[in-house]
Length: 454
Image (cartoon, rainbow, N blue to C red; front, top):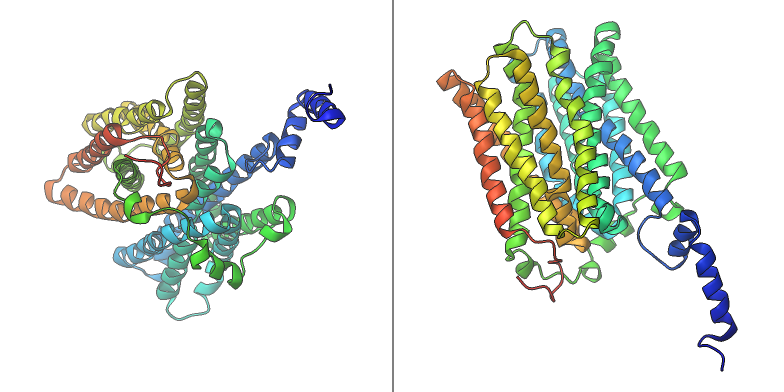
């Protein structure tokens, strides 16, 4: 008797055996079978592309902080007026996190990232031109920075949504960590190249540099990576994404009653707000405590350390899971380093008066914080693959808003006490609270389906 499937069965078996001889053949078979995840080659291409995109995001975001002092001198702005421009970005940034996550969940993160990048790239490019077409440059630049914040606010929720849909669970931590390195790369690139452009050719070139590279990146993504149907968003697409038929099976009322969901939200709020606080105040701390120190050292070394730390944490996380360790245990261990051990060095930073010891503590604190990419960031995708973008958007909105508050409170307490201790203590307390909640209630099982119970 012939085996089940007959002659066609033999052909299929032969095809499967021959296909498994090379990774490329395996990728081809998976794509033909309707596998939603990226093939090995696609994953490498997209990881590198999104790494560059995140780098450019931070390049564009850093243009105004780098040029603020020079522009203030040129236009006669006070520190309060400069503060209005600098803060306007973050108010826009807070407003589109949830929207960007929702659109990415429904329409695809690739499309949302591309459209937003091209838009904020153009805004960056035209900023120097806009200054000279109005008699009130302060108002116009503040508005442009607000718009940039609106469009950049969708980036990280879109990444969370994209990775949950296109990257396998066993590879997500490494992918998130590598792409997350773009924030450190962008800070380094703009800190180096941007400072030189500012000194040699004027503040306008800093904006042209970041904006042009972003638009060029968008063109390359559109031309070489996206399919035709993924290259834009229409009003019809937007209408479909908010139609009743597009609503997922998630019971939102029950979803937000689950402890693991709130554990990841609280942890992300803690991570984002404390990272923003340190990012905002560390340069001033070094300048005041060590006035003879070189800015290019303390503004660069911690971020150089953070890049290999992020890659290592992603590799370590995926390796431990591949060896059979429970996913939730690995996520919690990553957070213990990212929020717990890093806080020890934050405390040490506030107590030391030795310059190179301060550099060491700052580098270890910033480097260990990148372990959060392999912890809470990926846990969002563990819990809710169907709505990871929206969930991350909710958490990151809270983190951004709280970050603005913490930065203000830190400045207030430092001014009233004359000490840096309140700022560092605030960072540690917020991190410890977030870590305790995460280690107690975090899980790695899906929470976006009704069959999952807490």
